[in-house]
Length: 482
Image (cartoon, rainbow, N blue to C red; front, side, top):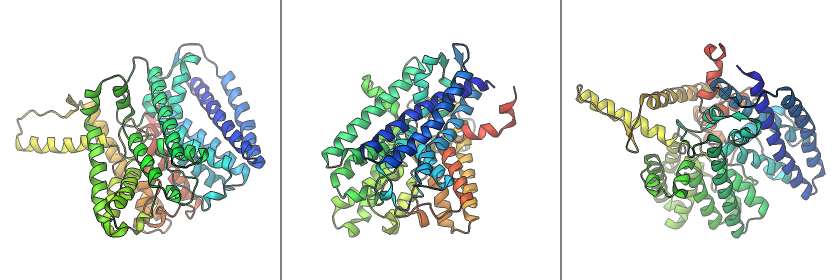
């Protein structure tokens, strides 16, 4: 294990985060929030010197390559240390006095979960609200992906790092060099971010609100500056814009490269994308019909149904209404989408559509094999035969996901909570969704949980964001053997 190179890259990652903490301090200064500015500066006075010391004392020779083990370790440590550091401004400012609560909130931000312990969001300063949403934006495309783009400047190769962090069962290299792929992903991400900010401002949002809600949208995170979430703006235009961008953020970003490069055939033949869009449209339509008696017109029903379906399916977690008060069919339809998630290579969480499609294909394949024992059948995705090294990890992931879902449910239930709240909490945190049902509905939060459950849920959020394998592999004895 090359510990020095792991610490070296980790120090770079923390220095990158420091830049965005400083930007948040500038925002606080512009709003004359001096106490908040000092809370950010205190954090920087701890993080920057420590990061620089680690950076210079762990310098290695040029052209070092991160191995597979180093990649897995660095990604997990990256999310933990980022959350540890990111929690400090909340503690120093006194906005969240408990470090456990501050860590939970920050881990929820970086993992783009959107679960919150805050009971009065509007009471937070502008600077802290900006930093809170910024953790979403950084975690969405991945602070690790941003680090990979900068690794050549340090003479370090980072393909293993990107593979360990990439959301989904596979990582397609859009360009010949992995660093170019990382840069292109961020180029698309930043482009969508600026576009949504502009469109939301056209709808009457301030630059601050447009920016913070865009960060939550593009990262499929869900942190809002209002206690009533997006519903506080009471604007059909804002609802529609955010709905569209949530759906876009939940799609595989590799597909946007195909569009830009003129490969329209590759875009429209993508099976995962077609299934993803189909699920969104079908669930939205069914809920719209079911909500006719609630909202009085199909147009209004469609507006609320489309937003909430996109929010839950992409694991964003924004809300325009308290869906826990909707008819039973609508609530069950949304509960169903919580098991799916976005596409691979997107900022969305959950099991991912490609895994669902793969497992369905595998099930039908086994039934065919039972009917025709001597027959030869092949599993295909996008016209390409799926190999065992793709299918087996998907099946293994699904088992681990269900096992952890039950384990976290039991962990929450140990606090004496009902089955709906316990299971919904596990699903909402492991799937990086945020709000759920029961006592963590869209109008409620996670503040009532005891300390030990908040730490369990913090681990669950990281497991979900890093695709389970990346974290669990660290506890296997073989991983640490030389």
